[in-house]
Image (tube, rainbow, N blue to C red; front, side, top):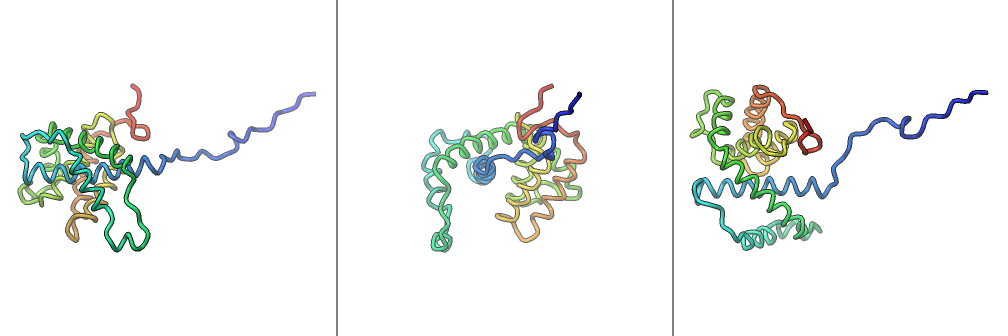
Length: 193
């Protein structure tokens, strides 16, 4: 008598997308916000040729203190844990350095995608949001899915930009996505070749 074994629960269960832990996503989002602030400071104050200051702890203290407004504190919102900020800060420095190292290529990609909008006409903030997302999509050692990079950039434009900045950022980044071949990635890590 031949019996067939019942399928295991793993076989029966529908394949679910692997979710990243919330703390990891929060750290990535925070690192992008911090990187944007660094890029803004580099372009507006420090200059692209000056190195980032070695001790950025005072800046980190300032960010920790200013994370949550008084109104949000009254509503019970708490600042990010210092450990998340430290990890985010480390990644944000790497992102800012990567943008600085690939600045000419980034600006060329943005200029090609933003037809009729020279870089000098794009606001300082939007320009750096575009640089950051383009770097993550095209040049970062650990490639980021274009969908994630664009979504995060649109969120940054909503949070920091002018009223319609997010539409401009979304359009330019979508054009860059379409004009460049996709890179392989697996949950934020490069795929093995």
